[in-house]
Image (cartoon, rainbow, N blue to C red; front, top):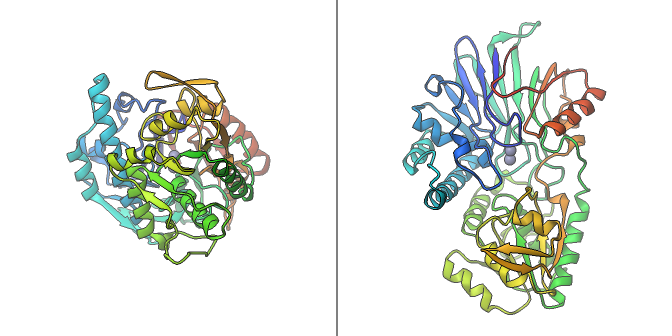
Length: 456
Ligand SMILES: [Zn+2]
Ligand SMILES: [Zn+2]
């Protein structure tokens, strides 16, 4: 078997790996690299292999850095199957639609070429097959595949490939596992990450390979405390939220707090068309979710409550500013680099009664990072604003496993892993993670370079 690395090698994003056997070539993920400003031109780097020779494509989960280049495969002539879980397929469509929109805006503003068109996306969608977890299938001749729950977002998986043309010393097909992204512990709406039953080789993400997250129990308490404080003094709580997963977790936690009367019943606005569409997918696939807290309320819905307003249109969104009451506004995007959240920040950032709650990673150079760093003034649409609102960041909302969880996950139920490749992490983080793992694992730990190929 030959394994080669075509993305997410020197950095966190752009997941793309190729497995070749005597009879078949299978690609795992086709993700877009994401720069600070979602620079589209960077993704025009060649893939590094002939996409028309692929027999199948496997997708671990819907995030753009794992799926953003799927339509580009079509543009370059790929017409084979694209396998993923059923909820992933539904989420991929939302993500690719959003990407097409942003690409069109970029093309207009700065002349960036768009890497693919809506037609390529449409054709890619028609080749996608949504499967369940634990359904073994032959993705290509001699390659048996299964998706396992990674507990990272709805439908996320780590994927196992049993290679019949590549046998172990005991004569069994070699099993290679691709982690995709592994979820944090105790996400309130997701099942826990499945353990690995057995594996010979693991390609493992290392996003937080150098950190330990704060315990998840504290997050609900801190969220309730901060929200109550801001609302009681009559302010507005702005939560810049990532449309997929983080928003649904927040809605569910707010639902519970309201049912338990831990929050005043103020209006809560979900002001993001993408998040509204995503929440519908979460409702549809709720049998894939796991709710720690069984309280449902009279509406039998895990994500809504009487005071929730889903504002789909721009007109409805503008109306929110007319509402002078204490309220909560969830709006995208999560790093505050664009989207409706900017309008709400303009209205509330200078108000000392209001609050901004940061619930996700803020990349360097983004407005979110400047607010996170408590800079005194920031620029929004070329105007200066004083940051007078109270800012709180809660780290326990991370969607990724920390190093302790990854180490646990790398212990299979049966036997030991012989080789571990570390990807999906900044270089110093991967080095630290490799040292950390080698203290307690006997596996050979390898940090591959871009385009590097291994015979296994
Ligand atoms: Zn992810
Ligand atoms: Zn990822």
